[in-house]
Length: 226
DNA sequence: GCGACAG
DNA sequence: ATCTTGTCGC
Figure 1 (cartoon, rainbow, N blue to C red):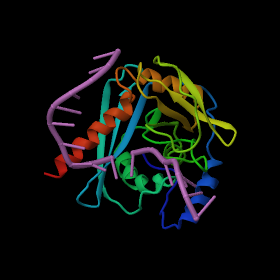
Figure 2: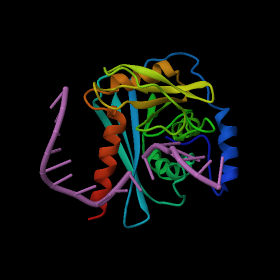
Figure 3: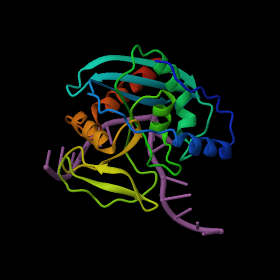
Figure 4: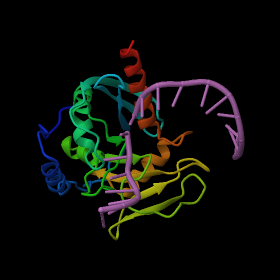
């Protein structure tokens, strides 16, 4: 799986912000609503001692959530963590990781925001546009916007409003548990993004794709640190 | 200026 | 994100 857009990322924050604004215009809607058969979850894990970090991607069947394949990669951190610029930090390792993926999955689920972002271009959107693939932002906490607490039952949701417009939804993926924050990454409707996230959440708050990717890359890192 | 702030 | 055990609640 090769990226359709190459990035060097030797940018100042101002330039990075401009790039985000420019690329957010390339986020598009799907022409057809094609059937989703595979969902790929991706995540990154950091080393506390060294400046190394790791990426993991797991492809699962949908809606069965059977693990079909997984890949990992190692890299060196070259960009600080700054809220709003997470993609410039994590995309380099994720790129190495995704290059090892055979065929493109139907959808990529990312641990972070899609358009629920200051410049409508969070990590999920960045990956989606870079690889020209449908992507979903599934974050554990909010970056921007406000929302009313959704109902307590699994499946309940409420809109995330930012600057007067809806940029996503707080989605309850499990009864009586903190919601996750879903937003469109690329080439997908919010409705489909919510459906996929909800169906992918079989038993835990975090939907299987990103949950499995998190476990995979965490084990990969710990294994590497021995 | 102050507070907020994905991972 | 990462370092960590038990503990409270469904």
